[in-house]
Length: 232
Length: 243
Image (cartoon, rainbow over all chains, first blue to last red):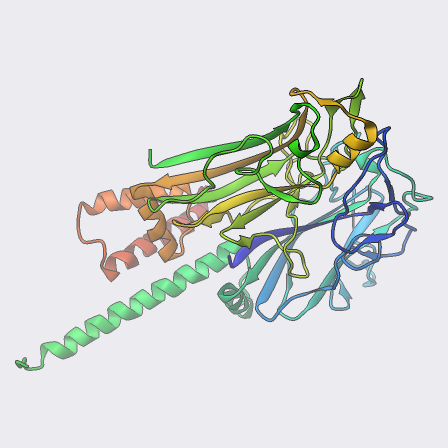
């Protein structure tokens, strides 16, 4: 499974009394009245939170870092609510920046909304995919930063609607093994890296190998035709 | 029937009088094919020698909060907060960015059913997943809203059969017989396996009228033809080979 479409989702909902769930999405329990025994953590404005290791919501135990045999292509990000934004960090560099060149909060939820099922307004958003997509190369660390543009979930309340939960979503193509080598080859040739181009390149490799085989077969025949045959 | 589009829907309904063990535990992955919960099949999905499977779409009930609705200790509605993981033989398809097995894709990213008010799903299974002969495959559903705990806390005595607690859906193409062989040929040549490409390859085979197709030249011309066709679609914007 060398080409896999992956997705990572972050939510700021955690069991009552905690800020973070380090084992992924937490189990949600409910009281007799049907209220969830969890809170959506307050998010202060203009303070970026790493959705993987930021200490709020569901987190990972270690930062995202690609192994030597991995290559990823990030092609979609989204967040909720619309008064939030998302930025992509590779190493220490933020992807989205102001026209002045200074990194900003990133793409807003209004532009790329990750709609909850009970949203009252059906935002469609301006983007579905990032064009061009973002490449993260073997060995690079990466992360996604979520920034609220106003205070979200003030006082860390118990949510009653999905639309009260702050969320972030990132979709990417994970390329590993031999396909990672093909991806690096495409990158060297300045050809866009995608599932289609990797398959195209592999087809070409096979085709060229076949052509070489045919050519050597023909040249061998040419050489052999002038030689005297002998019995062994 | 060499190429068939197949659907499998798994539904977890109420089972009448409440018994905790009739329902899955929270944060435990259960097969949608052979677990003890919901509808099931007798034999785990196995791709036979003469078959080839391409999975291209799936989804599950969306929603995070359970929003239970109860009347007279009867649970009438429930959202599961579900995730779906694909397992091929013993390997999980989805992993998180720290490279460990994850719960998979949420119902928010890949909802099912998909209503008129929903925007298109964020998650698309592109490229699709190929399941080769002799491989087993499975979809595992994880519910993160603790139904058992809630029923015990709220004193639920009945979950009627009309209450749908969770649903999952899988759509795939099943190629069998000669079409499965063609899938292998396409796979060897690195050509995406779609209905369109299999049909195209069959047309080439028919044109060859029984000539020896196992020569290198034949492979080469087939790949050249595919390349030309691909370029034609690129040029005139009528690409149809996407799965």
